[in-house]
Image 1 (cartoon, rainbow, N blue to C red):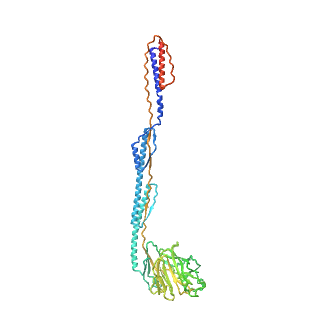
Image 2: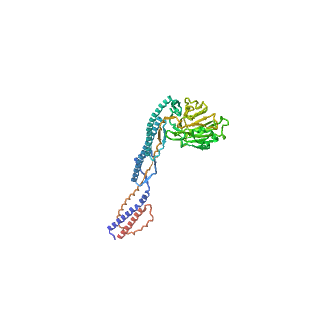
Length: 564
């Protein structure tokens, strides 16, 4: 049925089909292996640039840690990641260096300022040094505040230097004045800085006798002594207040108990009567002093002692209580002398403390004349912060011992009108003075009178003072708070291993067609071969080849049979 050429052509087509089937079947096994390699990674080489950057970061004080490896899809991605890590580390290194430089600069600034303060403190031991705690959000703000502190120190030093030069000049002048007072004083108390200069004035009438005396106070630095220019009662302004005994305001002669002889107060104006006076009785006279700046002060009077031991029997009033009349001298002037009249006692001691309007005691210079010391009476003046004895003028007819002056006569003296008889001067400094009046021969029911203060009784006075050194206040600064150490993390990369594509199998060489054998003499019946079941270890490809070859053999046999 087929020609020889057709037979050959068919065989070729069969073999070609078999080869194609074999090639197709050979691709099946490598495909499975390729899919299994998708999760395989290999470590990527760490570039030297990254290793160097890590070392530089550590040297810059950065806390560097290595984190877990990171998987990258390919080498290109790994290279980009490493480059990014290098860039980030370099930027962080620059920041760390900047922080270190800024911190070092701030610390150096603090040291410079504080060393300067130590230097000035050594030069000026009285300088006051404080430390300023600087709270700043960053080092730039710290430096701004620290520089301000340094500028303040230099400004304080310049101010101190200027003021100190002025103080030194002033104190040098004060020293020259003090030295002159020491050499030309009539009375002096160098310890308290009191110097009385001038002379008694015999031609002066009454208190004019004291008109040429001047009390000088050389005040030590920071004593702050008040110079009273006027002391005494101010009519219409002064008043007796805060008495812890019964007070009769503006007493009349009729209010004096038991018809007491009141002739002794006829020269003055009584303003208050205190009855049942005892040691501890206190009262205040308002607006009783004025300093050289026009500031007014009060004086608190305390009865500290009363002596009744020498009263003549039968001369007491019926109630036998001590009464005290407080008033002021008649005459003119803003500040009048304060008059005290007491009865039913020989001696009475008063303490006078001058107070500011807040009730605080003030240290003051007092210089005044004391008069009306007669009938063997004695007067004692004591200041709590000086030791100047009373000044006894010639012809006073007083005997003065220490701070106590006693009349040597038994007759009446008309106040200051007979000065210097029965008068003396006193000067001192302190927050209080004590005055004791003794009348040993007093008739109990009679009023015994003495006067204190008053413009007329005041001596001329002035004050010079040493100035304290000006204050030098210096400021140290706290140490800066430097930024915390920076941190960084880096990692190695793992690169995905690309799958290896399978190598295509070499197609099998088609079998050379068999030369048809010589026809047998006797035709043989073709034998059928049983099909083999199952596939061995040859796989799908081997089975396909055998089947193709078998088909080709059957076909050959059939062709041969047909030919025959």
